[in-house]
Amino acid sequence: MAQRMNPRKTIELDASHASLASRPAEVCDLVELAVRETTG
Image 1: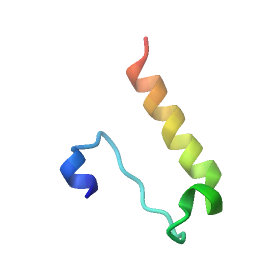
Image 2: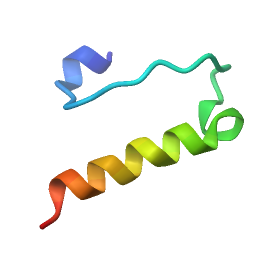
Image 3: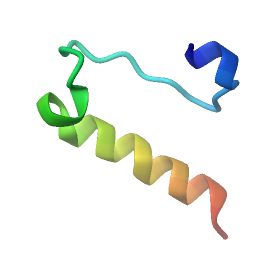
């Protein structure tokens, strides 16, 4: 599914389906990277 979205970056986490709850730091880092790359 991620490939169909044509993302700039993906990460793989050793986590359950609830990665937002079980690995919040890694998810937050990815979101912050996306913000930095898309804003001036």
